[in-house]
Length: 98
Image 1 (spheres, one colour):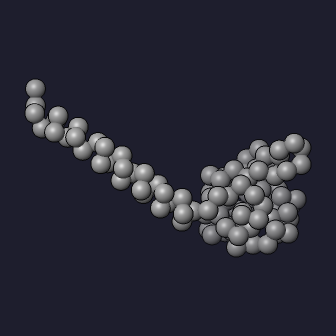
Image 2 (cartoon, helix red, strand yellow; image 1 turned 90 degrees about the vertical axis):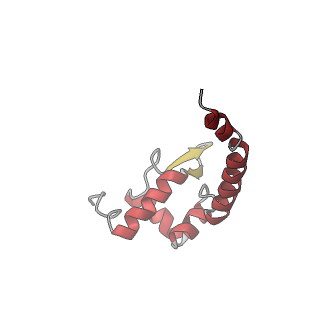
């Protein structure tokens, strides 16, 4: 058996610690995106624009957000991040035909 394989096992705790530090830094850079206010800030839009995006079908229930208790909007972070990329590329408006 290779002795260096066991030596590498000793590196795991340090790597786990470093991973936690990096995740903490990442969480500080990327704010939570679950409320309309947070999403508006992340997209650099107003809350009324977010409402308009919902009305026009740019933001879709079940894809970009869900409703809690039938009324409260809870946005899906991964979908909002992807939506921002689409906005930046000008693709978000092309998906919906009016």
